[in-house]
Length: 214
Length: 214
DNA sequence: AATCATTTTAAACACTTGTTTAAAACGAAT
DNA sequence: ATTCGTTTTAAACAAGTGTTTAAAATGATT
Image (cartoon, rainbow over all chains, first blue to last red; front, side, top):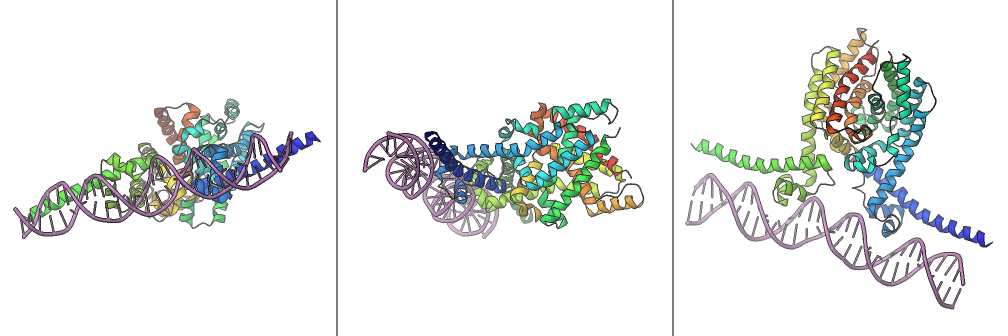
């Protein structure tokens, strides 16, 4: 009974605490993604989360620390699944196909993510480079090893693994950062842009495979 | 004599005017490129240009209009030469080779340009999309036509021109936006990064040509 | 030497920023 | 009913923002 009460107490307190904390994180995440850190004021965050301004400082000490919390969350969410594909036990062609597909699907679900990452990378590179999770944004040791093995088996030509991975990432990610200009040049709607992107799965796969041929 | 005086008068006035105007533009350009619009204050610009704060308003009316002036300048500078290559009377392979080479050399000379463009594109897309010059950032009608002709001659396979141009641009430009992360992952110095980029001229060319083969 | 438009200056403006403070509200434990 | 730690609130803070103002300096023209 006492124990139950104790659990109840903590769960309720934690629940409430997480409620407002989470409200702050969620509102701030949306605003940071849409307008960026600098153009988002703490009063805007508070108003969107329907909480008092100073609660942001109460729970996160400062706007900057809230920002770092959100960076970690966004990057972690994005990079987790991708690393798993690169490290999976899959035949090379199939792995590349799945990687492209998953990465593009993830970016279609989070269309602002790439611009957010690039903005942070441009203004506060150390905020990103100090995170371990960014290592999973592209390439892994296991994948590099696999590329080398395939070369030694004579299945693919000799390539620089880092360059190859940057090629993959460039082809996958850049169009999202360039979206507004692509849409304007082609008079694309949001839907048409997504179709344009989905077409790329096949195109990118073919380019990479073609390039790998010995 | 009077005429000469008149010329002198105007040239001197214009000279002075351009001097402070140019000082403002130059200082602001550097700061906007390095830290972005939002993190650059007008007092910082004035201090760097060694002029009084209100001269910025005197010559450009507002920080925002100064920003737009600088956007036009930077984009125009970047896109001019590139368009010429795409529209030149060159054999397809040679044109692609030159385009890659010129684009990469230009970005090595202006390493902050891509991040700047992407930042503007992310926060004030209409500021860029309303400019005619952005049409020259990639693709042209003439180049699209050339690709179609080569296909009809049976020299290359059927491709979507827009997709092909986005592929080129992605492979060329994205690594500059991702520089900090590439440098961190590989422990690159600035010099090593540039070497890494220069290697890409050949790699990108091979990828694209390989993909075009019927 | 006086005039006049242009350029430059310092000061002030109104407003927003992120953060801190100290009091109030809350909610369970005694 | 009171106590006590946690959470929430409104108000104030100091610092910084872009812009405006009105006076001063400049320098060629009359």
